[in-house]
Length: 432
Image 1 (cartoon, rainbow, N blue to C red):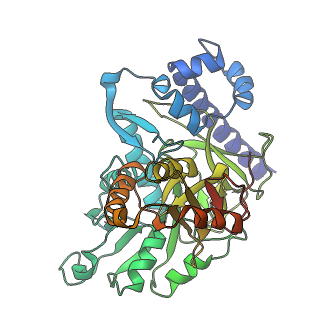
Image 2 (cartoon, helix red, strand yellow):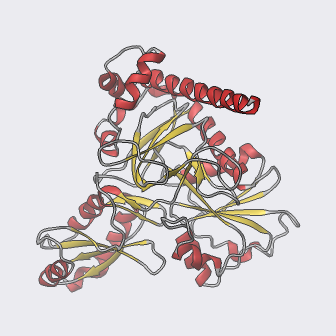
Image 3 (tube, one colour):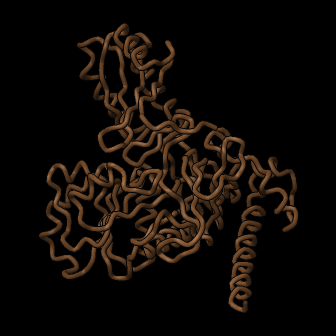
C-alpha cells in the first residue's frame, strides 16, 4: 500500500511538472501574433490553459507557410539561425531558432544519443548534410558536442567511409553512425565498408518497423550488411523535438522535459494506446517560434505502459504513412504539390504526371513524367536536377514521354483524367 502511495505521488509530481512546462509554452506562444489571435486571451492562468489547450485547433504546415512571421515570439535581432523543411505547397517552411533554441537542440539530441548508448569519448559519424538550411546535421553535431563525443561530419554521400577503417581514429573505441537507412542500404549494395568497431546505426527519416513493430523490408535488408544494432529516431524540423530509441526499446520515447505528443483521429479526438492517428507535437522551451499542437502530417501510434527497456514514458511507433499525399524520400518530406510545381515549369505542353510507388525496400519512390522535344531533353534534365535540388533538396526520377502516353499512364493508374499526382504505393494513409 505504501508503495502504491509513493508511486502515485511520483506520478502526480511528473504530471504537475509537465503541466507547468505546457503552461510556460502557452504563455510564451501568446507573444506570437498568430497564437494571440487564435487563443484570444492576452494572459493565461493555469486553470484557463487547462481548458483552452485541448480545444485548440491543430497548427499545420499550411499555417506556417501562410503566416510564417506571425509565429515569431522574439525580436528579429534575437534570431541566430534560419532552417527550412523541404517544402509544402511549393514553398519551404522557414523556422527561426534563437540562442535558447540552439541550446535546446543540443540538449534534445544529447538526451537522444545518451538513450542510444553514446557516451563521452565515443565517435559519431554524421552521414547527414549540414548545408542547405537543413537542421538535422546541425542538431546531431550539437548533441554530440554536448555529450563530449568525437564527430566526423561525413555528409550523405559517405564517400570517405571507404578509407575510414584505414585511419588511426579511436583505436579500440566505439563509433556510432547516423544515416538515412535507404541511402545506407544503397551504399552497402555497392560494397561500402563500415568501421569494424561500429556500436550502432541511428537511422533517421524512414521507419525500420511495420505496424506490428516487426522489422520491415528496409530493416531486413540492412541487417544483411550491418551487424550493429539498428536504432530509429523520429523528429521534425518544425518542433526540433526528438523521439529516440535505445537498443532495448520498442518505439521512440517521448522526452517529457522537451515536449508532449498526441495522436489524433480524423475527428481530432485522442486515439487509444497503440491505435494509429495523426502525430501532433507540442514542444516545450521553444523560444523563437513556439508551436502549440503542431500536426506533423505523419501517421503513427503512441504506446503507453512499461517499455521492454524499463522506461515508462510514452513511445512512438513507426510512421505508417503520410497524410495529405506527403512523400518522404531519402529522409526528406515533400508534398506532391511541390513536385507538381516543379514538373509544371518544364512540361512543354503542360502535360506531366507525378507518380509515387514503393520500391523493393518499402521506401517511397517518385517518377516525374514530362513531355519534351527530344533535342531539348539533355539540357532539360540538367536544369531539372539543378532546380529540384534547390526546391525540394532531392532529385526525383525523370522520364520523358509524349502527351498521349502520359495520359494513358494516368488512366492505367486509375487516376482522374486531369490528376497531376498518382499514388501507387501499397500502403493507404488515413486522410484527415
